[in-house]
Length: 307
Image (cartoon, rainbow, N blue to C red; front, side, top):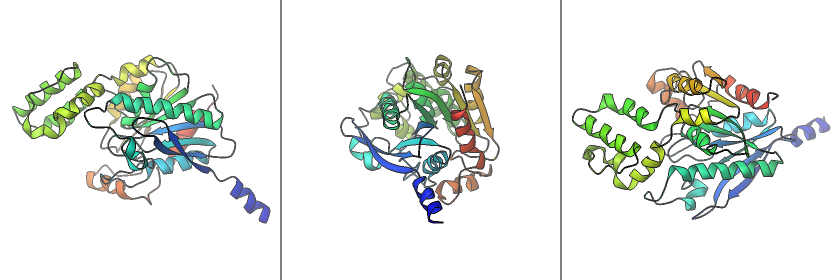
């Protein structure tokens, strides 16, 4: 009996604090390593002040990234997940809003991928990008990257940010605010600052954030996924109220050889949830709710399949 207990303890994955050199300060995360890992992946977080576990002060405490890391470890896959720059233990690595660009998150992803591969003795690391992290993962392959084995894109946008924002904002805005907002986004997509924006939308178009928006709006997920020649899995929950099947299919159309997985009854946090908005959002703050049963299995199966 003692030998069985010891064997179980020895096989538990090991959580190791890791850091990534960066300016103005290092970034911090956790490497979760099972015994004799068969692969390693970096979990790239979604938008907003998201920490390594997938939580944020914006009402998200479901721990989706921690749950995913633990589930993948059970199947022999090591994971590295990190606090975004400016968040939690990476708070000192934050930058002023005026200086921050989308490319900073892309360079962070590349750095974490190289470190994950080196620390586990693997030739490369997989990038598992969730929500905005899916676009970060795609952009990290731009120009080629031999430290990236392949991509797993979860709940990611399949169309440029301007199109998605117009779709989200359009029905909510009266004229002439709607036309003004759409004009501002077109200017930003073209790489130009937009000085004349609706005062009511200052939170979105404030001058200090416009350079970041320009760096984000230039990226086209469909073009990036078409240019990447490595393996890709696209995963999308069908009760996701933030991204949609339309986006998943747009990505798949640009890469017909990609593996497309649609999960019935699964929401943006990769958990079972109804389509009803209030009930769906309630899962965001429930850390006791597990990941949907098929999510980790499908991801692990894709990563570990022979190639």
